Length: 290
Length: 325
Image 1 (cartoon, each protein chain N blue to C red):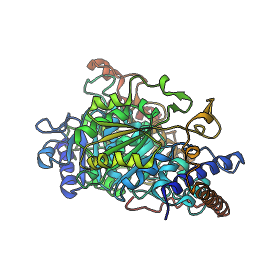
Image 2: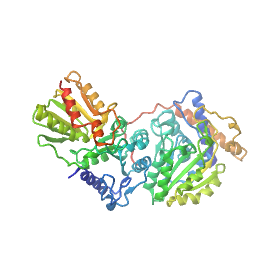
Image 3: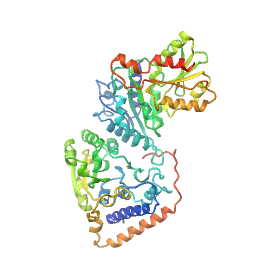
Image 4: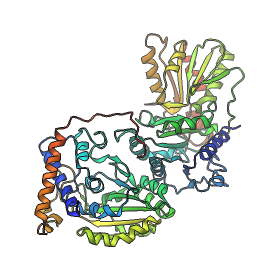
Protein backbone atom coordinates (compact mmCIF):
# COMPACT_ATOMS: atom_id res chain seq x y z
CA UNK A 1 0.00 0.00 0.00
CA UNK A 2 1.26 3.47 -0.90
CA UNK A 3 1.59 5.64 2.19
CA UNK A 4 1.61 9.43 2.39
CA UNK A 5 5.35 9.25 2.98
CA UNK A 6 5.78 7.16 -0.17
CA UNK A 7 3.88 9.77 -2.18
CA UNK A 8 5.83 12.67 -0.69
CA UNK A 9 9.10 10.93 -1.49
CA UNK A 10 8.00 9.94 -4.98
CA UNK A 11 7.28 13.59 -5.81
CA UNK A 12 10.55 14.73 -4.21
CA UNK A 13 12.67 12.27 -6.16
CA UNK A 14 10.71 12.83 -9.36
CA UNK A 15 11.43 16.56 -9.21
CA UNK A 16 15.09 16.00 -8.36
CA UNK A 17 15.37 13.64 -11.31
CA UNK A 18 13.95 16.32 -13.62
CA UNK A 19 16.53 18.88 -12.53
CA UNK A 20 19.19 16.22 -12.99
CA UNK A 21 17.94 15.43 -16.51
CA UNK A 22 17.94 19.13 -17.36
CA UNK A 23 21.48 19.50 -16.09
CA UNK A 24 22.49 16.70 -18.44
CA UNK A 25 20.71 18.36 -21.36
CA UNK A 26 18.19 15.54 -21.68
CA UNK A 27 15.01 17.62 -21.36
CA UNK A 28 13.61 20.14 -23.81
CA UNK A 29 12.29 23.57 -22.88
CA UNK A 30 11.62 24.31 -19.24
CA UNK A 31 9.98 22.89 -16.13
CA UNK A 32 8.83 24.14 -12.74
CA UNK A 33 9.43 21.83 -9.82
CA UNK A 34 7.43 21.80 -6.60
CA UNK A 35 10.35 20.89 -4.32
CA UNK A 36 9.30 21.81 -0.78
CA UNK A 37 5.58 22.04 -1.62
CA UNK A 38 4.85 18.31 -1.85
CA UNK A 39 2.78 18.10 1.33
CA UNK A 40 -0.11 20.18 -0.03
CA UNK A 41 -1.36 17.86 -2.80
CA UNK A 42 -0.54 14.74 -0.79
CA UNK A 43 -2.64 16.00 2.13
CA UNK A 44 -5.51 16.94 -0.17
CA UNK A 45 -5.52 13.73 -2.22
CA UNK A 46 -7.95 11.65 -0.10
CA UNK A 47 -10.24 14.66 0.34
CA UNK A 48 -10.87 14.78 -3.41
CA UNK A 49 -13.04 12.22 -5.17
CA UNK A 50 -13.05 10.86 -8.70
CA UNK A 51 -15.91 13.18 -9.71
CA UNK A 52 -14.06 16.31 -8.57
CA UNK A 53 -12.28 18.41 -11.17
CA UNK A 54 -8.75 19.48 -10.33
CA UNK A 55 -7.18 22.48 -12.07
CA UNK A 56 -3.43 22.66 -11.77
CA UNK A 57 -0.91 25.26 -12.82
CA UNK A 58 2.64 25.58 -14.14
CA UNK A 59 4.05 23.98 -10.98
CA UNK A 60 1.86 20.92 -11.16
CA UNK A 61 3.88 17.70 -11.07
CA UNK A 62 3.04 17.14 -7.40
CA UNK A 63 -0.65 17.79 -8.07
CA UNK A 64 -0.60 15.17 -10.80
CA UNK A 65 1.39 12.55 -8.90
CA UNK A 66 -0.81 12.95 -5.81
CA UNK A 67 -3.93 12.27 -7.92
CA UNK A 68 -2.59 9.63 -10.32
CA UNK A 69 -0.05 6.93 -9.56
CA UNK A 70 1.60 7.54 -12.91
CA UNK A 71 5.16 8.87 -12.74
CA UNK A 72 6.00 7.14 -16.03
CA UNK A 73 3.14 8.81 -17.91
CA UNK A 74 4.14 12.21 -16.55
CA UNK A 75 7.82 11.77 -17.31
CA UNK A 76 6.98 10.51 -20.79
CA UNK A 77 4.91 13.68 -21.25
CA UNK A 78 7.82 15.85 -20.16
CA UNK A 79 10.29 13.89 -22.31
CA UNK A 80 8.03 13.44 -25.36
CA UNK A 81 8.11 9.65 -25.20
CA UNK A 82 5.56 6.97 -26.00
CA UNK A 83 2.93 6.58 -23.29
CA UNK A 84 2.88 10.32 -22.54
CA UNK A 85 -0.35 11.52 -20.91
CA UNK A 86 -0.93 14.03 -23.73
CA UNK A 87 1.41 12.64 -26.41
CA UNK A 88 4.11 15.13 -25.42
CA UNK A 89 2.08 18.01 -26.87
CA UNK A 90 1.27 19.74 -23.61
CA UNK A 91 4.47 18.99 -21.72
CA UNK A 92 5.15 19.86 -18.12
CA UNK A 93 2.43 22.46 -17.67
CA UNK A 94 -0.43 21.46 -20.01
CA UNK A 95 -1.93 18.16 -18.96
CA UNK A 96 -5.45 16.81 -19.32
CA UNK A 97 -6.71 13.60 -17.84
CA UNK A 98 -10.12 12.62 -16.53
CA UNK A 99 -11.00 15.18 -13.85
CA UNK A 100 -7.63 16.92 -14.13
CA UNK A 101 -6.38 19.83 -16.22
CA UNK A 102 -3.32 22.01 -15.97
CA UNK A 103 -2.51 25.10 -17.98
CA UNK A 104 0.30 27.60 -17.94
CA UNK A 105 -1.20 31.11 -17.81
CA UNK A 106 -1.53 32.62 -14.35
CA UNK A 107 -5.12 33.00 -13.14
CA UNK A 108 -6.56 31.62 -16.37
CA UNK A 109 -7.84 28.42 -14.80
CA UNK A 110 -9.98 30.10 -12.15
CA UNK A 111 -12.82 31.26 -14.41
CA UNK A 112 -12.73 27.82 -16.04
CA UNK A 113 -12.90 26.18 -12.61
CA UNK A 114 -15.92 28.38 -11.85
CA UNK A 115 -17.50 27.03 -15.04
CA UNK A 116 -16.75 23.47 -13.96
CA UNK A 117 -18.16 24.24 -10.49
CA UNK A 118 -21.31 25.62 -12.14
CA UNK A 119 -21.57 22.36 -14.07
CA UNK A 120 -21.07 20.35 -10.87
CA UNK A 121 -23.29 22.45 -8.59
CA UNK A 122 -25.71 20.27 -6.66
CA UNK A 123 -23.95 17.02 -7.53
CA UNK A 124 -21.77 16.89 -4.41
CA UNK A 125 -18.60 17.14 -6.49
CA UNK A 126 -16.36 20.21 -6.51
CA UNK A 127 -13.83 22.05 -8.63
CA UNK A 128 -10.43 22.51 -7.01
CA UNK A 129 -7.95 25.03 -8.42
CA UNK A 130 -4.34 25.29 -7.33
CA UNK A 131 -2.84 28.76 -7.59
CA UNK A 132 0.18 30.55 -6.15
CA UNK A 133 0.59 33.80 -4.25
CA UNK A 134 1.78 35.45 -7.46
CA UNK A 135 -1.50 34.52 -9.18
CA UNK A 136 -3.26 37.09 -7.00
CA UNK A 137 -1.91 39.79 -9.29
CA UNK A 138 -4.34 38.66 -11.99
CA UNK A 139 -7.79 40.24 -12.27
CA UNK A 140 -9.35 36.94 -13.32
CA UNK A 141 -8.91 35.74 -9.70
CA UNK A 142 -11.23 38.44 -8.41
CA UNK A 143 -13.81 38.06 -11.15
CA UNK A 144 -13.88 34.36 -10.27
CA UNK A 145 -14.14 34.77 -6.50
CA UNK A 146 -17.03 37.14 -7.07
CA UNK A 147 -18.88 34.64 -9.27
CA UNK A 148 -18.18 31.68 -6.97
CA UNK A 149 -19.62 33.51 -3.96
CA UNK A 150 -22.46 35.10 -5.91
CA UNK A 151 -23.63 31.81 -7.40
CA UNK A 152 -22.85 29.58 -4.37
CA UNK A 153 -20.51 27.28 -6.25
CA UNK A 154 -18.51 24.28 -5.01
CA UNK A 155 -15.13 25.87 -5.66
CA UNK A 156 -12.05 25.09 -3.59
CA UNK A 157 -9.08 27.37 -4.27
CA UNK A 158 -5.81 26.06 -2.92
CA UNK A 159 -3.13 28.71 -2.61
CA UNK A 160 0.44 27.52 -2.35
CA UNK A 161 1.91 30.67 -0.89
CA UNK A 162 5.65 30.22 -1.18
CA UNK A 163 6.49 33.86 -0.74
CA UNK A 164 8.06 34.31 -4.13
CA UNK A 165 6.79 34.67 -7.69
CA UNK A 166 9.60 33.63 -10.01
CA UNK A 167 12.13 36.09 -8.51
CA UNK A 168 9.75 38.65 -6.99
CA UNK A 169 9.12 38.38 -3.25
CA UNK A 170 5.45 38.71 -2.25
CA UNK A 171 6.11 41.97 -0.39
CA UNK A 172 7.01 43.63 -3.71
CA UNK A 173 3.84 42.37 -5.38
CA UNK A 174 0.97 42.25 -2.89
CA UNK A 175 -0.57 44.92 -0.72
CA UNK A 176 -2.84 43.70 2.06
CA UNK A 177 -3.46 40.00 2.48
CA UNK A 178 -5.10 37.10 0.70
CA UNK A 179 -7.40 36.62 3.68
CA UNK A 180 -8.65 40.21 3.52
CA UNK A 181 -9.18 39.93 -0.21
CA UNK A 182 -11.32 36.81 0.31
CA UNK A 183 -13.27 38.54 3.07
CA UNK A 184 -14.10 41.34 0.63
CA UNK A 185 -15.94 38.82 -1.55
CA UNK A 186 -17.56 36.97 1.33
CA UNK A 187 -15.50 33.88 0.53
CA UNK A 188 -14.33 31.71 3.43
CA UNK A 189 -10.56 31.65 3.91
CA UNK A 190 -8.32 29.44 6.00
CA UNK A 191 -4.57 29.80 6.42
CA UNK A 192 -2.63 26.66 7.30
CA UNK A 193 0.97 25.59 7.69
CA UNK A 194 2.02 22.84 5.29
CA UNK A 195 4.07 20.64 7.55
CA UNK A 196 1.70 17.95 8.82
CA UNK A 197 -0.46 15.87 6.47
CA UNK A 198 -2.80 14.59 9.19
CA UNK A 199 -3.30 17.99 10.79
CA UNK A 200 -4.19 19.48 7.41
CA UNK A 201 -6.77 16.76 6.79
CA UNK A 202 -8.31 17.19 10.22
CA UNK A 203 -8.87 20.88 9.62
CA UNK A 204 -9.97 20.58 6.01
CA UNK A 205 -12.31 17.58 6.11
CA UNK A 206 -15.35 19.53 7.41
CA UNK A 207 -14.44 22.62 5.38
CA UNK A 208 -14.22 20.68 2.12
CA UNK A 209 -17.55 19.02 2.93
CA UNK A 210 -19.05 22.52 3.14
CA UNK A 211 -17.55 23.42 -0.25
CA UNK A 212 -19.47 20.52 -1.75
CA UNK A 213 -22.74 22.11 -0.69
CA UNK A 214 -21.91 25.40 -2.38
CA UNK A 215 -19.72 27.39 0.00
CA UNK A 216 -16.57 28.35 -1.86
CA UNK A 217 -13.35 28.23 0.14
CA UNK A 218 -9.81 29.54 -0.22
CA UNK A 219 -7.18 27.54 1.65
CA UNK A 220 -3.87 29.32 1.91
CA UNK A 221 -0.87 27.14 2.67
CA UNK A 222 2.43 28.59 3.81
CA UNK A 223 5.01 26.59 1.86
CA UNK A 224 8.67 26.88 1.01
CA UNK A 225 9.79 26.67 -2.59
CA UNK A 226 13.09 24.90 -2.15
CA UNK A 227 14.01 24.81 -5.82
CA UNK A 228 14.44 27.49 -8.43
CA UNK A 229 11.44 28.96 -10.28
CA UNK A 230 12.28 26.83 -13.29
CA UNK A 231 15.58 25.15 -14.09
CA UNK A 232 18.46 27.07 -12.55
CA UNK A 233 17.29 30.61 -12.08
CA UNK A 234 17.20 31.03 -8.32
CA UNK A 235 18.15 34.53 -7.22
CA UNK A 236 17.74 33.86 -3.50
CA UNK A 237 20.31 33.18 -0.84
CA UNK A 238 19.68 31.12 2.27
CA UNK A 239 17.38 28.60 0.57
CA UNK A 240 19.14 25.73 2.33
CA UNK A 241 18.09 27.27 5.67
CA UNK A 242 14.37 27.05 4.76
CA UNK A 243 12.37 24.45 6.60
CA UNK A 244 12.06 21.21 4.65
CA UNK A 245 9.73 18.33 5.58
CA UNK A 246 12.26 15.97 4.04
CA UNK A 247 14.89 16.95 6.61
CA UNK A 248 12.34 17.13 9.44
CA UNK A 249 11.03 13.64 8.77
CA UNK A 250 14.36 11.98 8.09
CA UNK A 251 14.60 10.39 11.54
CA UNK A 252 11.08 8.93 11.39
CA UNK A 253 11.09 5.15 11.61
CA UNK A 254 11.18 3.65 8.15
CA UNK A 255 12.11 6.91 6.41
CA UNK A 256 15.46 5.73 5.08
CA UNK A 257 13.90 2.60 3.58
CA UNK A 258 10.99 4.52 2.05
CA UNK A 259 13.41 7.12 0.71
CA UNK A 260 15.55 4.43 -0.93
CA UNK A 261 12.45 2.79 -2.43
CA UNK A 262 11.22 6.06 -3.93
CA UNK A 263 14.68 6.91 -5.29
CA UNK A 264 14.95 3.48 -6.88
CA UNK A 265 11.45 3.66 -8.30
CA UNK A 266 12.10 7.04 -9.91
CA UNK A 267 15.48 5.84 -11.14
CA UNK A 268 13.89 2.88 -12.88
CA UNK A 269 11.10 5.06 -14.31
CA UNK A 270 13.71 7.43 -15.74
CA UNK A 271 15.68 4.57 -17.33
CA UNK A 272 12.57 2.91 -18.71
CA UNK A 273 10.98 6.09 -20.13
CA UNK A 274 14.25 7.32 -21.66
CA UNK A 275 14.47 4.06 -23.57
CA UNK A 276 11.00 4.46 -25.09
CA UNK A 277 10.50 5.65 -28.68
CA UNK A 278 9.44 9.26 -29.27
CA UNK A 279 5.77 10.02 -28.84
CA UNK A 280 3.49 10.44 -31.84
CA UNK A 281 0.79 13.09 -32.08
CA UNK A 282 -2.64 11.92 -33.28
CA UNK A 283 -3.88 15.45 -33.97
CA UNK A 284 -7.34 14.51 -35.17
CA UNK A 285 -8.10 11.78 -32.66
CA UNK A 286 -10.98 12.92 -30.47
CA UNK A 287 -11.06 12.50 -26.71
CA UNK A 288 -14.51 12.13 -25.15
CA UNK A 289 -15.49 12.62 -21.57
CA UNK A 290 -12.49 14.69 -20.51
CA UNK B 1 -38.47 38.60 -40.10
CA UNK B 2 -35.71 40.88 -38.90
CA UNK B 3 -32.21 39.55 -38.38
CA UNK B 4 -32.33 40.03 -34.61
CA UNK B 5 -35.57 38.02 -34.47
CA UNK B 6 -33.99 35.27 -36.53
CA UNK B 7 -31.03 35.25 -34.14
CA UNK B 8 -33.34 35.23 -31.13
CA UNK B 9 -35.25 32.33 -32.64
CA UNK B 10 -31.96 30.43 -33.15
CA UNK B 11 -31.00 30.92 -29.50
CA UNK B 12 -34.44 29.69 -28.40
CA UNK B 13 -34.00 26.61 -30.58
CA UNK B 14 -30.52 25.83 -29.19
CA UNK B 15 -31.67 26.08 -25.57
CA UNK B 16 -34.90 24.17 -26.23
CA UNK B 17 -33.11 21.34 -28.00
CA UNK B 18 -30.45 20.77 -25.36
CA UNK B 19 -31.10 20.81 -21.61
CA UNK B 20 -27.33 21.22 -21.08
CA UNK B 21 -27.07 24.41 -23.14
CA UNK B 22 -26.36 27.64 -21.27
CA UNK B 23 -26.38 31.30 -22.22
CA UNK B 24 -24.31 33.77 -20.21
CA UNK B 25 -23.82 37.50 -20.49
CA UNK B 26 -24.49 40.93 -19.11
CA UNK B 27 -28.04 42.32 -18.93
CA UNK B 28 -29.60 39.34 -20.69
CA UNK B 29 -32.60 39.02 -18.42
CA UNK B 30 -36.14 39.93 -19.37
CA UNK B 31 -37.75 42.36 -19.65
CA UNK B 32 -34.58 44.04 -20.97
CA UNK B 33 -33.48 40.95 -22.95
CA UNK B 34 -29.95 42.07 -23.79
CA UNK B 35 -28.54 45.34 -25.11
CA UNK B 36 -29.64 44.47 -28.65
CA UNK B 37 -32.64 42.29 -27.68
CA UNK B 38 -31.14 39.15 -29.17
CA UNK B 39 -31.85 37.27 -25.93
CA UNK B 40 -35.42 38.48 -25.43
CA UNK B 41 -37.68 35.90 -23.82
CA UNK B 42 -34.92 33.42 -23.12
CA UNK B 43 -34.53 34.05 -19.40
CA UNK B 44 -38.29 33.70 -18.94
CA UNK B 45 -38.38 30.40 -20.80
CA UNK B 46 -35.10 28.95 -19.49
CA UNK B 47 -34.53 30.69 -16.14
CA UNK B 48 -31.90 28.28 -14.82
CA UNK B 49 -29.80 28.28 -17.99
CA UNK B 50 -29.82 31.94 -18.98
CA UNK B 51 -27.43 33.52 -16.53
CA UNK B 52 -26.93 37.23 -16.07
CA UNK B 53 -23.38 38.06 -15.09
CA UNK B 54 -21.35 40.85 -13.60
CA UNK B 55 -19.24 43.01 -15.94
CA UNK B 56 -16.48 40.41 -16.13
CA UNK B 57 -15.80 39.50 -19.76
CA UNK B 58 -12.74 37.41 -18.93
CA UNK B 59 -14.50 35.38 -16.25
CA UNK B 60 -17.73 34.77 -18.10
CA UNK B 61 -15.85 33.57 -21.17
CA UNK B 62 -13.80 31.29 -18.92
CA UNK B 63 -16.99 30.03 -17.25
CA UNK B 64 -18.33 29.22 -20.70
CA UNK B 65 -15.12 27.36 -21.48
CA UNK B 66 -15.38 25.45 -18.18
CA UNK B 67 -18.95 24.39 -18.96
CA UNK B 68 -17.89 23.36 -22.47
CA UNK B 69 -14.98 21.39 -21.07
CA UNK B 70 -17.46 19.48 -18.90
CA UNK B 71 -19.56 18.61 -21.96
CA UNK B 72 -22.16 21.37 -21.85
CA UNK B 73 -22.92 23.81 -24.66
CA UNK B 74 -22.13 27.38 -23.68
CA UNK B 75 -23.03 30.59 -25.49
CA UNK B 76 -21.44 33.73 -24.10
CA UNK B 77 -22.58 37.20 -25.12
CA UNK B 78 -20.03 40.02 -24.95
CA UNK B 79 -22.17 43.14 -25.08
CA UNK B 80 -19.90 44.96 -27.54
CA UNK B 81 -17.22 43.07 -29.44
CA UNK B 82 -14.73 45.80 -28.48
CA UNK B 83 -14.76 44.29 -24.99
CA UNK B 84 -13.66 40.88 -26.27
CA UNK B 85 -10.11 42.13 -25.81
CA UNK B 86 -10.77 41.51 -22.10
CA UNK B 87 -11.51 37.86 -22.90
CA UNK B 88 -8.70 37.36 -25.40
CA UNK B 89 -6.71 35.16 -23.03
CA UNK B 90 -9.64 32.88 -22.34
CA UNK B 91 -10.45 32.52 -26.05
CA UNK B 92 -6.95 32.25 -27.51
CA UNK B 93 -4.91 30.74 -24.69
CA UNK B 94 -7.55 28.60 -23.08
CA UNK B 95 -10.52 27.59 -25.25
CA UNK B 96 -8.70 27.36 -28.57
CA UNK B 97 -5.74 25.64 -26.94
CA UNK B 98 -7.83 23.18 -24.97
CA UNK B 99 -9.29 21.60 -28.07
CA UNK B 100 -5.81 21.05 -29.42
CA UNK B 101 -2.96 21.09 -26.93
CA UNK B 102 -3.61 17.98 -24.89
CA UNK B 103 -2.57 15.56 -27.59
CA UNK B 104 -6.00 14.40 -28.67
CA UNK B 105 -8.77 16.76 -29.76
CA UNK B 106 -11.05 17.76 -26.88
CA UNK B 107 -14.56 18.61 -28.12
CA UNK B 108 -15.74 21.99 -26.81
CA UNK B 109 -19.04 23.60 -27.68
CA UNK B 110 -18.38 27.25 -26.86
CA UNK B 111 -19.76 30.14 -28.89
CA UNK B 112 -18.77 33.70 -28.03
CA UNK B 113 -21.27 36.14 -29.53
CA UNK B 114 -19.84 39.51 -30.49
CA UNK B 115 -22.10 42.42 -31.49
CA UNK B 116 -19.74 44.38 -33.67
CA UNK B 117 -19.09 47.25 -36.04
CA UNK B 118 -19.94 50.93 -36.40
CA UNK B 119 -22.66 52.97 -38.02
CA UNK B 120 -24.67 53.55 -34.87
CA UNK B 121 -22.76 56.42 -33.31
CA UNK B 122 -21.40 54.52 -30.32
CA UNK B 123 -17.92 55.99 -30.71
CA UNK B 124 -14.34 54.72 -30.73
CA UNK B 125 -14.60 51.96 -28.09
CA UNK B 126 -18.02 50.55 -29.04
CA UNK B 127 -17.84 50.39 -32.85
CA UNK B 128 -14.80 48.45 -33.93
CA UNK B 129 -14.53 45.39 -36.16
CA UNK B 130 -11.91 43.21 -34.47
CA UNK B 131 -12.32 40.06 -36.56
CA UNK B 132 -8.74 40.22 -37.79
CA UNK B 133 -7.36 39.55 -34.32
CA UNK B 134 -8.97 36.10 -34.34
CA UNK B 135 -8.00 34.99 -37.85
CA UNK B 136 -5.46 32.18 -37.88
CA UNK B 137 -5.73 31.02 -34.28
CA UNK B 138 -5.41 27.23 -34.42
CA UNK B 139 -8.48 25.59 -32.90
CA UNK B 140 -10.69 28.68 -33.17
CA UNK B 141 -13.41 29.16 -35.79
CA UNK B 142 -14.53 32.66 -36.79
CA UNK B 143 -18.07 33.19 -38.08
CA UNK B 144 -19.99 36.30 -39.03
CA UNK B 145 -23.73 36.78 -38.96
CA UNK B 146 -25.35 37.47 -42.32
CA UNK B 147 -28.82 38.41 -43.53
CA UNK B 148 -28.54 35.56 -46.05
CA UNK B 149 -27.68 32.78 -43.58
CA UNK B 150 -30.34 31.45 -41.23
CA UNK B 151 -28.90 31.75 -37.74
CA UNK B 152 -30.30 28.46 -36.53
CA UNK B 153 -28.49 26.65 -39.31
CA UNK B 154 -25.27 28.51 -38.50
CA UNK B 155 -25.56 27.79 -34.76
CA UNK B 156 -26.27 24.13 -35.53
CA UNK B 157 -23.09 24.02 -37.60
CA UNK B 158 -20.99 25.76 -34.93
CA UNK B 159 -22.25 23.42 -32.21
CA UNK B 160 -21.76 20.32 -34.35
CA UNK B 161 -18.14 21.30 -35.04
CA UNK B 162 -17.37 21.03 -31.30
CA UNK B 163 -14.72 23.73 -31.61
CA UNK B 164 -14.74 27.09 -29.87
CA UNK B 165 -16.22 29.79 -32.12
CA UNK B 166 -16.39 33.55 -32.13
CA UNK B 167 -19.55 34.79 -33.85
CA UNK B 168 -19.40 38.41 -35.01
CA UNK B 169 -22.78 40.11 -35.35
CA UNK B 170 -22.66 43.41 -37.21
CA UNK B 171 -25.01 45.60 -35.21
CA UNK B 172 -26.41 47.32 -38.31
CA UNK B 173 -27.90 43.98 -39.35
CA UNK B 174 -30.15 43.53 -36.33
CA UNK B 175 -32.91 45.74 -37.71
CA UNK B 176 -32.58 44.61 -41.35
CA UNK B 177 -34.83 41.96 -42.85
CA UNK B 178 -33.59 38.42 -43.35
CA UNK B 179 -33.14 37.11 -46.87
CA UNK B 180 -34.12 40.40 -48.49
CA UNK B 181 -32.09 41.12 -51.61
CA UNK B 182 -32.43 43.90 -54.17
CA UNK B 183 -34.79 42.65 -56.92
CA UNK B 184 -32.16 43.30 -59.58
CA UNK B 185 -30.39 40.21 -58.28
CA UNK B 186 -31.05 36.62 -57.41
CA UNK B 187 -29.30 34.73 -54.68
CA UNK B 188 -28.56 31.20 -53.58
CA UNK B 189 -26.83 29.43 -50.75
CA UNK B 190 -24.48 26.46 -51.15
CA UNK B 191 -22.56 24.89 -48.26
CA UNK B 192 -22.58 28.05 -46.19
CA UNK B 193 -21.61 30.36 -49.06
CA UNK B 194 -24.24 32.87 -50.18
CA UNK B 195 -24.00 34.12 -53.77
CA UNK B 196 -25.87 37.18 -55.08
CA UNK B 197 -25.71 37.63 -58.83
CA UNK B 198 -27.38 38.36 -62.17
CA UNK B 199 -27.60 35.92 -65.07
CA UNK B 200 -24.46 37.24 -66.72
CA UNK B 201 -20.83 36.37 -66.03
CA UNK B 202 -19.50 38.99 -63.62
CA UNK B 203 -16.94 41.64 -64.38
CA UNK B 204 -16.05 41.75 -60.69
CA UNK B 205 -16.51 39.36 -57.78
CA UNK B 206 -17.00 41.03 -54.41
CA UNK B 207 -16.24 38.89 -51.37
CA UNK B 208 -17.53 40.21 -48.06
CA UNK B 209 -18.55 39.03 -44.59
CA UNK B 210 -22.23 39.24 -43.65
CA UNK B 211 -22.11 42.68 -42.08
CA UNK B 212 -21.06 44.25 -45.36
CA UNK B 213 -23.84 42.60 -47.42
CA UNK B 214 -26.10 45.63 -47.79
CA UNK B 215 -23.29 48.04 -48.62
CA UNK B 216 -21.98 45.64 -51.25
CA UNK B 217 -25.46 45.21 -52.74
CA UNK B 218 -25.95 48.98 -52.94
CA UNK B 219 -22.61 49.37 -54.71
CA UNK B 220 -23.51 46.52 -57.09
CA UNK B 221 -26.82 48.17 -57.95
CA UNK B 222 -25.19 51.50 -58.76
CA UNK B 223 -22.45 49.86 -60.83
CA UNK B 224 -24.99 47.89 -62.82
CA UNK B 225 -27.45 50.72 -63.44
CA UNK B 226 -24.97 53.52 -64.01
CA UNK B 227 -22.09 51.73 -65.71
CA UNK B 228 -23.41 48.31 -66.71
CA UNK B 229 -20.72 46.69 -64.59
CA UNK B 230 -21.85 43.25 -63.44
CA UNK B 231 -20.80 42.05 -60.00
CA UNK B 232 -21.30 38.83 -58.09
CA UNK B 233 -21.28 39.00 -54.30
CA UNK B 234 -20.02 36.08 -52.23
CA UNK B 235 -20.76 36.00 -48.49
CA UNK B 236 -19.23 33.13 -46.50
CA UNK B 237 -20.65 32.38 -43.07
CA UNK B 238 -17.43 30.97 -41.66
CA UNK B 239 -14.56 33.37 -42.20
CA UNK B 240 -11.89 31.13 -40.74
CA UNK B 241 -10.88 28.45 -41.50
CA UNK B 242 -11.88 29.60 -44.96
CA UNK B 243 -13.30 27.17 -47.50
CA UNK B 244 -11.50 28.78 -50.43
CA UNK B 245 -12.43 26.36 -53.24
CA UNK B 246 -15.85 27.85 -54.08
CA UNK B 247 -14.43 31.41 -53.93
CA UNK B 248 -11.63 30.40 -56.27
CA UNK B 249 -14.09 28.81 -58.69
CA UNK B 250 -16.14 32.01 -58.99
CA UNK B 251 -13.18 34.40 -58.95
CA UNK B 252 -11.52 32.50 -61.78
CA UNK B 253 -14.18 33.71 -64.24
CA UNK B 254 -14.12 37.42 -63.32
CA UNK B 255 -12.01 40.33 -64.54
CA UNK B 256 -11.36 41.51 -61.01
CA UNK B 257 -11.91 40.59 -57.35
CA UNK B 258 -12.61 42.94 -54.44
CA UNK B 259 -12.66 41.85 -50.79
CA UNK B 260 -14.62 44.35 -48.68
CA UNK B 261 -14.62 44.45 -44.88
CA UNK B 262 -15.28 47.07 -42.22
CA UNK B 263 -12.03 46.46 -40.38
CA UNK B 264 -9.14 48.88 -40.69
CA UNK B 265 -6.41 47.71 -43.06
CA UNK B 266 -3.45 45.63 -41.95
CA UNK B 267 -3.33 41.91 -41.20
CA UNK B 268 -7.00 41.43 -42.04
CA UNK B 269 -9.33 38.65 -43.08
CA UNK B 270 -9.55 40.27 -46.50
CA UNK B 271 -5.77 40.21 -46.90
CA UNK B 272 -5.86 36.50 -46.06
CA UNK B 273 -8.56 35.89 -48.69
CA UNK B 274 -6.52 37.89 -51.23
CA UNK B 275 -3.43 35.83 -50.44
CA UNK B 276 -5.30 32.58 -51.00
CA UNK B 277 -6.72 33.81 -54.32
CA UNK B 278 -3.33 35.05 -55.49
CA UNK B 279 -1.78 31.71 -54.68
CA UNK B 280 -4.54 29.68 -56.35
CA UNK B 281 -5.08 31.93 -59.37
CA UNK B 282 -1.61 33.35 -60.05
CA UNK B 283 -1.35 33.72 -63.80
CA UNK B 284 -5.13 33.54 -64.17
CA UNK B 285 -6.20 36.73 -62.40
CA UNK B 286 -6.16 39.71 -64.70
CA UNK B 287 -5.67 42.17 -61.83
CA UNK B 288 -4.43 41.93 -58.25
CA UNK B 289 -7.21 41.27 -55.74
CA UNK B 290 -8.26 44.67 -54.36
CA UNK B 291 -9.15 45.31 -50.72
CA UNK B 292 -11.71 47.77 -49.38
CA UNK B 293 -11.50 48.79 -45.71
CA UNK B 294 -12.46 51.48 -43.31
CA UNK B 295 -9.95 54.33 -42.98
CA UNK B 296 -6.85 53.91 -40.82
CA UNK B 297 -8.51 55.73 -37.95
CA UNK B 298 -10.41 55.44 -34.72
CA UNK B 299 -14.16 55.62 -35.23
CA UNK B 300 -15.57 59.03 -34.29
CA UNK B 301 -18.93 59.42 -32.60
CA UNK B 302 -20.58 62.26 -34.56
CA UNK B 303 -22.52 60.82 -37.46
CA UNK B 304 -20.83 62.87 -40.22
CA UNK B 305 -17.37 62.07 -38.86
CA UNK B 306 -18.17 58.38 -38.44
CA UNK B 307 -19.43 58.16 -42.04
CA UNK B 308 -16.17 59.68 -43.21
CA UNK B 309 -14.04 56.79 -41.88
CA UNK B 310 -16.21 53.66 -42.11
CA UNK B 311 -16.39 51.38 -45.12
CA UNK B 312 -19.39 52.52 -47.18
CA UNK B 313 -21.20 51.62 -50.35
CA UNK B 314 -19.06 54.29 -52.05
CA UNK B 315 -15.80 52.75 -50.82
CA UNK B 316 -16.81 49.45 -52.39
CA UNK B 317 -18.12 51.13 -55.57
CA UNK B 318 -14.89 53.05 -56.06
CA UNK B 319 -12.71 50.03 -55.27
CA UNK B 320 -14.56 47.95 -57.87
CA UNK B 321 -14.06 50.66 -60.53
CA UNK B 322 -10.39 50.96 -59.63
CA UNK B 323 -9.94 47.17 -59.79
CA UNK B 324 -11.30 47.09 -63.36
CA UNK B 325 -9.01 49.83 -64.73
